[in-house]
Length: 84
Image (cartoon, rainbow, N blue to C red; front, side, top):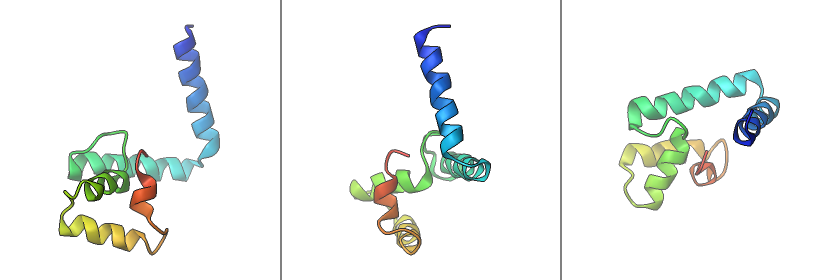
């Protein structure tokens, strides 16, 4: 097995240890919804996608409200989520 494959498997194992089963289900659901409703990347969450849109001044009113609602759960959630 090549180094790239070994590194990828190790990354997957670390990710599985870092997040519980339910957290992984929530993450993949978030990413799936990002693809379905925002035509976003399968590797990005909705809040990350919207955070980038807000920063680029391309977010619509609904996306801005969604991020404001998420800020009640975590301060600056969409901004912190960029890259997830």
